[in-house]
Image (cartoon, rainbow, N blue to C red; front, side, top):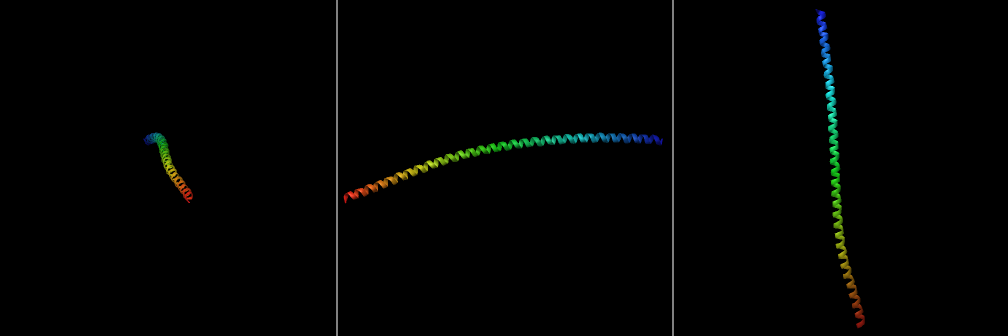
Length: 111
């Protein structure tokens, strides 16, 4: 009977070891699946972040382009205004010089 018990215990031990090995294989498979899913999620997140970064950069580039165009327009407008003021001042200066020259010539003619 003791041999019978030993044989049954040995069989039970082998059965338990087989169950443990199956559980280990299943755990390894689950772990591998989880790692694969984590890599997929990470890759997807990185792609989405890259797309968002590119979109933001494009948007900022467009904003900078618009700002630059606005600044160019303002600078052109200011330059035109300053040119107009400069021409007016030049005309006034020419008129003043001509008037003084005419006055000086007139004073010489009277003397």
